[in-house]
Image (cartoon, rainbow, N blue to C red; front, side, top):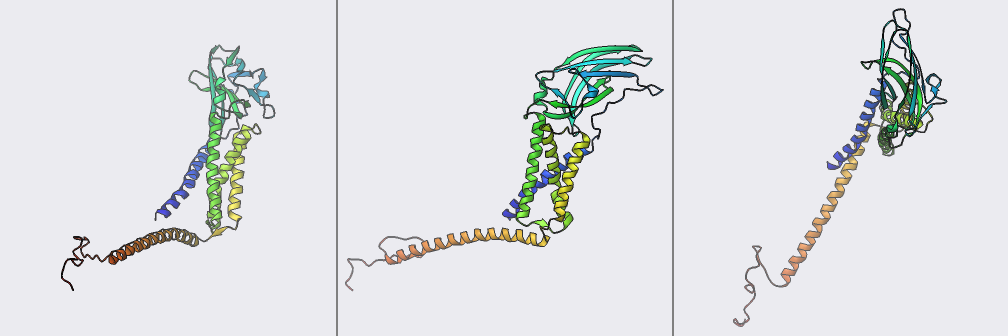
Length: 334
């Protein structure tokens, strides 16, 4: 009984890991699928033209010219210098309260820096502004290629305009992004270990669909691990389109392997195997107890034989007074 419960507990750990991974995948896939490389339009007037036109450079590079082939390098030790040129084409004042620089992967914000500039632009005016953003905290937040964006925010922190670009973050592996990737790797290794153990013990379901569903969580985990690895090694900027494609491909391959691989056994055979294994361990314990009982019985028999050889006899478990069962040496001569 205890052995069976212990086996169920071991099997439950991969199940918990699969549930956690499934929740993570559902939350990420349910997020917005914007690629993070296009510029968002500013609020428009009634005729459809934007109320705010803008140009921006980061460390001397125009933001519209940054692409995946030549991402923007952001080093915590160097900082970021931003130059803005804003044109208010509307008939009303436009207030730009702050500028935000952030990066997201799989819908999760990996770094975020906001600087307040407090610009109040009259109608039909042009304003330029240059300022620095201290990105020293990047070393503990992210590393690798990260889809990033620059946003202009109004007084209510609404987005007036934004532009996306890939950034090469020179952070640390011990950053939040790196630790998150290592956590996903650990969950995936647990799922793979459980899968390989089930194959070795021939405990895979005979039904193809059930067997494929056993392989699916490991495939999703491998997709996440591959995405984080390519991002950390600066091989891929994980935009929504790219990381979704990687995860779905890995999941599809794992599902196909589980479906077509002829390694399944009938459910009743698997249950019988588990019961036999548990009974075998219980029988081993029973044999040990029987051996101990036999040893005790042998020891008790030896003690009784020794008692008979000395000529002493008792019936109540007490040896009584010594010498009562022996003939008196000074008695009558028989």
